[in-house]
Image 1 (tube, rainbow, N blue to C red):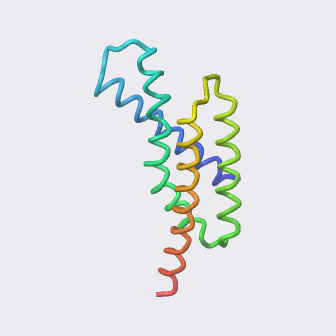
Image 2: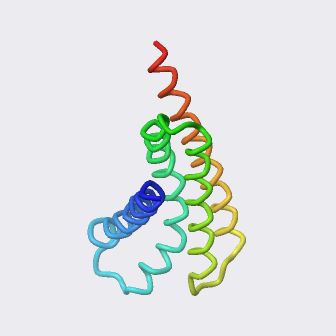
Length: 124
């Protein structure tokens, strides 16, 4: 359960960090509504881009627990993520759900590749 919560914190922190950089460095002085609108478009992209290395590392880190445990961890992450998306008070357009599907697919693949890499490294 610690791994699931750690992954949630890291991914949310990545989204906050990107929007903070955008609002403080790339486009300072804008209206808060501008940054909120930007976050709704950018955060799903950040989730895909940051999710690949984060979940690859998580797969390597958790490889000693076995592939099944890694898959359960990723499934729990996805369940919590979908719940958070569903509870977020905004219009859920096709974009949000499409990016969510892409994000979850890449996270699952990256974590499996992380496990595979860890196993190959130990075998060598």
